[in-house]
Image (tube, rainbow, N blue to C red; front, side, top):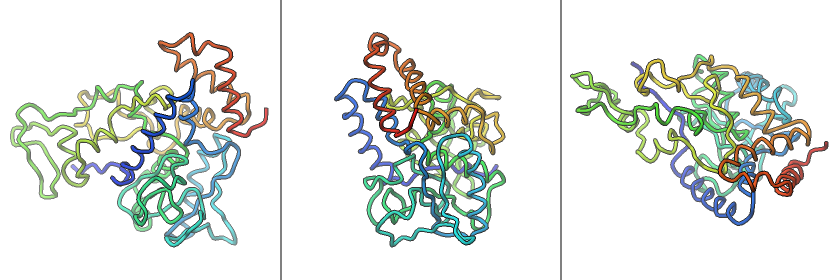
Length: 335
């Protein structure tokens, strides 16, 4: 069995995000209803063009990436501007002091990853002088190895990472889904740690299997328990607006069967791993609606979802009007 390589941001980037998000949570506690607005802080302005630039790769690869993202932009009120001029696509460099683009793509780092939404231009994300972060001279999205060899379902990988870049999180971390209860976090009882020649944890001589924590601690991921929790555990952050769990989503990881307690698992994907699902497209329309009226509808839907246990506050007409007015004003859209 080939080892499972999972997507992950560098540790120093995750650490800076945790500090920033803790500050945002404190901010959200300072005013009524602000938690809903805070959840929108990583959304790009509606109707505007978000610039994309490439560090490396040739124009043929750049064209393929741009073409793959059309399925995303066709579903929402947002343009990805790749800066195509005289047959060449926009580029950025590691010596840039101003932003050549909001989304800065590279192919030279290990694995696939992306900062989420406007984190790509947040200078507090990542450390100065390191490859990944929110500064003009840092990568915000990486498609490792695409210059030499692409995965079989490379279009799905591109769409997955660009969905992150537009503000979407992993489907398996949706608290409305079954994944937290479905993952085999711990080893089979009596498991004796056993590695293959590559350093990957494998079943022992009695057939007992490593759990998710043990497996990901070995090659090729070498994840700590905290990193596993950050990347795989259900996200109960009240700042997030969550849609329904969608097994067909391009944002749902494909895990090896032994990650799950059951086969087939209710957490395993049913999509083709390439195309956006109808729910993905609906999420894009909700996050990047065409009109102020659609934005107001999204606010009402999210307010209803937030109302569990606090119906009196959410049912307040003044509260709803205030949130809708603020969101519409932030978005800069016309009715």
